[in-house]
Each structure stands twice: as structure tokens, then as C-alpha cells.
Image (cartoon, rainbow, N blue to C red; front, side, top):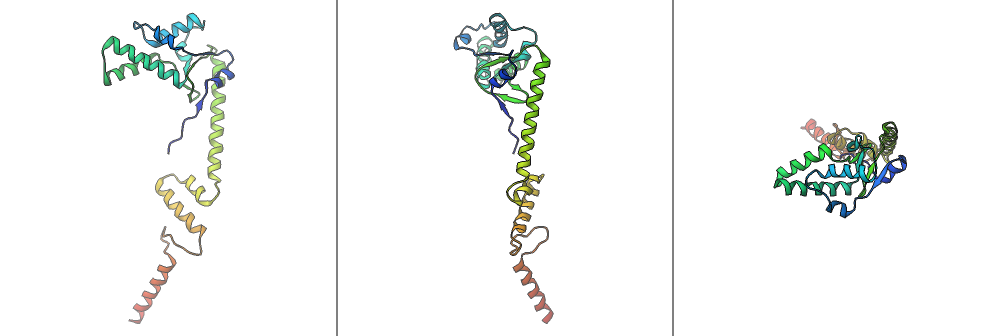
Length: 212
């Protein structure tokens, strides 16, 4: 089972970086878009002209929550389809290329961004990097605590399973755990162990052979 990527609300970024700009794109903004340039180019121009953000490196400083990112991509897809008449896989490739080249960031400190809004961080890279380092450290601490919690589970079987490197080994360790928890009645055959009732049967069989 894969590790789920942590998520982050945009307000966490704004709280940590007071100079960041939070922006909500109204529906009328999308209706006023021009087909002559990409939706992302229109976005950055609009941010500079109406929100007075510094234009330098704006592509790398603009972060989109999941909802805003979906709406921007949908608008860019519609624009490209109208201008080029592309469809299907060809349209998908064109949209992906446009997003890769100019789309806003959708991860911050390796966290998925939530909400239907944008955040533009200041061009003070030192401050932004400090916040990113702190968030990454918080996530690392949380993951370590979770791993320790699993490792010190309620029973021996959980501990073994959490430390098994493969599905095959996990199955074997769960068998060992079952045996260790019920030594008086060995019911699982693992690693050469033979159930008690079978051991008795084997001894009787060998005795019969001796008498024959």
C-alpha cells in the first residue's frame, strides 16, 4: 500500500507567509479570457495588473488549489480546442504541454494543495524556503511517529507485520505470531514446524514399522 501524499490548505501558506496574496478567480474572469494567449499567460498578466504582484518568476511563485487548478485546465483545454480543432489524445498532449510550460504550481512543500483559490508568494525566496523546510520537517516528524506507533502495536503480530519487507515475509511472520500466541496448541506449520497431532501420528506409524 502506497504512502498517501500529505495535503495543505492555502490558508496555511498565507498564515506562514503574511506577504502572500490569496486570490479567488470569479466565474466572470474565465468568461473574459482571450483565445489569443494561454489561460496561464492571461492569469499572470491579470495578477500583475490588478493585484500588483512582482512579475519576476511569477510562474514559480503562483500556487493553485485543486479546485482552481481544475478550472484553469478546463479553460485552457477549451481554448486550445477552439483554436486548433484538436481532439482526443492530441488535445490531451497539447493541454499537458501548456500546463507543464506555464501552469501554476499544485504542490507546496511536497503537499497537495486544497481549496478553489490561488496563492502568490513573495519573491523573497529565503522566506519561502524557510517555510517549506519547516513544513517538510513537520511531515517527517509525523511520519516517524506514525511508523513508531505501528511498530509498537497492540500485539506481537502487528509489530511483525509492520516490519516485514515483503508480502511473503509478512505472511510467514503472521504465522509465527499465531504460534507464539498459542504455544499450547501448535496449529500452524511454518519453517519446518509440524502440528502436534501429526507428530503423534508419525510416531505411531514409526512404531508400527518397528513391530512389523
